[in-house]
Amino acid sequence: MKKNLVASLILAVLISVNLSCLNVSAASLSGDFLGSDYITARNMQSIINDLKKSLKSPIEAYEIVKGLSDILKSPTTTYKAVKELADVLKSPKTTREVAEELIDTLKFQIDIEKNWDNLKVEKDMDLYNSPGRYVGKPGDILIAAVDPDNPDIEAIKMGSLTSHAAMVDKDPQKVLEVMPGGIQNAENDWKTRYKKILVLRPKTNEGTIKGAIEYGHSKLGLPFNFNFLDKTRTDKFYCSQYVWRCFIEKGLDLDRNGGKAVAPYDFISDKVTIVYKQGR
Image (cartoon, rainbow, N blue to C red; front, top):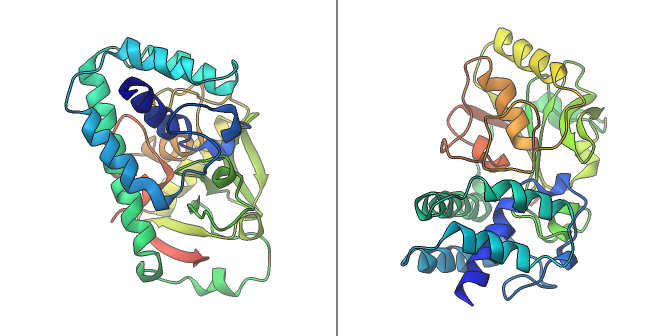
């Protein structure tokens, strides 16, 4: 029971980090923790409590990976993720570090959700007044926030915890983002694509913004990175890893907690300014 629970928890978080980028439904998962219910901010505290309990005794990485495999009904994209994670979770020490990082990430996200209405926003009125579908200025980071009440967000329907991130291109009507087919230069329709979003503006200079965008273009077409614990690789990317890499290549580390993974909410720190907020 405990092994299956912990496996479910780690699958729920690690594989659903940026799950909005993947075509995987919650119905494809089984186990005591996962089922037909959506994983939302409303039960994140119980996730944290269960993770804390699991830290009371050492857990072999092999057992966790085996448990992850057992709760998958078929070899889907999530199974590929499990296979890659198997190479990372090699010891109880690594497992503990991962679990502790997940706890930190979830606690932070709970705080953001609880204080959503009171988030400090230095409004860019150009963004608020724009009648177009696009939002943001070059180099801005877009986050589709957790919103269980908005059925248009595929990440929530699939049980994702952290949703999706992208970066506004030099032409603000376009975004650089990772989707199932890899890195794309897609339409910036975020204002209408999602109901609940944040726009973050890195506190940096125009040269860094220009360089980050140029780096992003240099990676167009590369595939999706299923190993969310390996944020340092540069041959494949998941959505928030891609945005993070674009900036760290220019000397700006935007990962809030500096962990093994980088989730969209990890971009919310004193290194950025929230310039636009949409939704409640």
